[in-house]
View 1: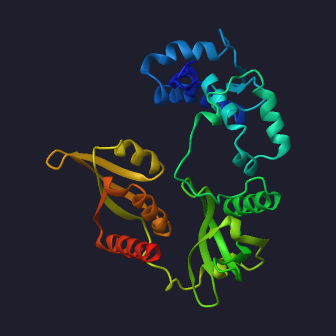
View 2 (view 1 turned 45 degrees about the vertical axis):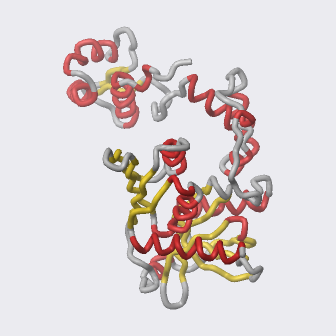
View 3 (view 1 turned 135 degrees about the vertical axis):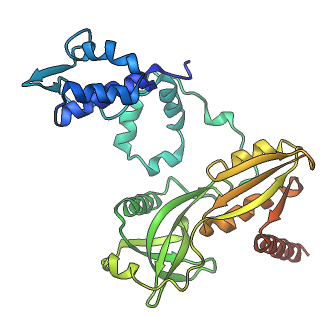
Length: 323
């Protein structure tokens, strides 16, 4: 199975760009030459241009000096490689896929991938050290709420949620979802965004499994966004610096655990450890802290001091509970 495909090369990209513009509004020879020179090698125009304008490929037709694509549809998306198809086929049994695709869409995908062998099987993986109370992805109400939040993020639409607290109480939360976050360790989805009250707005993170009711909020988005943010901590990314010991495969495990975070890692020859700076959103701080603690003694937090204090407090509380 190929790891790389020629369809992702510069020549395919250049031809696709020419055809897209030719399909929308037409294109002349000068514009074709410019696109080729910008996206490919300087001599590429000598063999690409004749093929496009009626040669071997014959993809364009001329009308008063303007060339238009002969294709029925604009070439917007790249075709999938065999490797990509195989990877998609392997994901079909994953119950989380129903959060994004309905039954009819899943049938269509299965139909198109019927002759494709899956890249792997879910049974090939043994997952451990995860929460036993992960979200129920087969729950139809959970699926509806997930898709509703996803649509609200895309449309910048505030929502009104009936949320169940950890103590079993019910509270109404008016919030603007901005991102969906998945915790591999907890096997849970969380919605991150801004919560609005009568006096201010502040960041909020909601467990999707605890959202019992969900509806579109009919308030004016511009008015709620103008609420003062004096409840909000400083904006922007935060960074935690950690030292990773070269034992128990700690470096590889850490890189996988924080794969979707921005980070910089260097090797410190004096200490024989890897030093890693991990950037994260302030709303994700608790999640980052829990992940770091799960590595035990093979990871040491170097900075900042506030993060270290939080770790000490959490460890002390855990010791008290065990006693």
